[in-house]
Length: 535
Ligand code: SAH
Image (cartoon, rainbow, N blue to C red):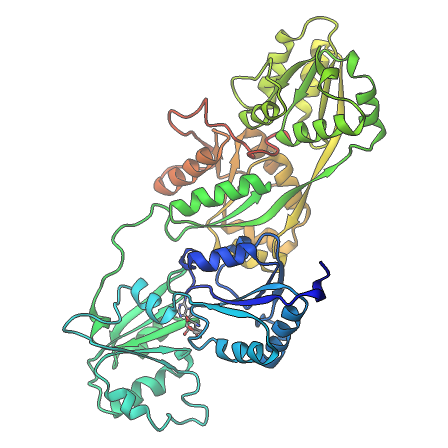
């Protein structure tokens, strides 16, 4: 249907206070089903990943960029609705708590665009809670009151009803008030609030970077200044700010930021494994596949399939593309009836099974070296090998086969290219993160090929985790030593390596091999459904 033939819908979805897992189930469903997301600066990009098919339109403020005025955002939402789009307007916290969501609804109402507001977890409640402060508590605080601290001193004065607000006995919560902390606390005291009333300031609540200070009306300003508390921040004043109900269950990787690189399948699994342990994992560079199915060398290989005794696959990508090519060149599985198949890794073997093929040889370990050595004894004299793989494939395979006098055709079937995610934020992210992960040599290549001088320098302060020696060697060739090498090529193996590294700070860790006890043989996944060490 032509987009202009129908009216779309706009969903105002509350994104929650920061921790991306605090979005509602309904918000998540709407994100998943929308075709356009309109968003401001979010505390987590992970929310955008919940809308994989959607066009993402940024309308927030970012350093050095023109930010859209509210009226322009309203107009944009109306325009998109008129085009027949299903839009999610993602807003921090709850859309109706100082989010100007009301103005957006009014604009949609006026234009007759269908809309729905999906409430979110507001920072006014969740941020104090994250710092251990309940906004109400039996016999301590029987109400809580949320106020903007932003407009307080627009003319340098407190609003006329401020003294009434100050006289309330419940918990006072100020949003957007950090810049006015001084007039707020002194105004409250002048209006009669005792100087020893508990107070807290919380920065980046519910996020790994969360920091807070707790004191009294008298001390809080100095405490916040000393700690260098910055925005976004919430000020809480009242007896409950004395309480400490912070979580006592600590996730092992809580507060640890990890920059992840690799294929979409692998990064998704690794990030979700890291999140499960409380870490903040984000994909910074994704590996995509560029096919060479049309090349002369590839066409030639398909033309003489009969001549090969073995097909050797070193990645699931290669398997997928190879079978795509079979159809493309007018062939089917019968043309492979005579061929034996070797594969590195479980992910590759699993992919082969999807096409109805078992493997004749899979090395014990999941490295190309082992495949090469194993092939020497498995291949019968005179049998020719076809190795369809990426141009970045390990040369060790060629060297070993050459030395053994085994004939083969090493054909470039695809290449792996790096796709940056928010490159402009990369340097900052690297500086803030504790780990950077690589799951394949091609991942290392793609990453380093695109680095600026500043980004390269930012690597100095980060611990680099590699899957296996081949990946670590690729890293070393780029002038950086691996700090941690996961010996088990899988998501659990890499997660365990990070955990172990974190828990043994006193050990000499450069290049240490970390294994995942008991799981070695059957936990191989490498880059999941995609490329592994030899991508
Ligand atoms: N609609 C949002 C509030 C928007 S106003 C909600 O319901 O949460 C933006 C203000 O919210 C910030 O200036 C800050 O005071 C507060 N805020 C939002 N997220 C925060 C966080 N993670 N930590 C501390 N303050 C936060």
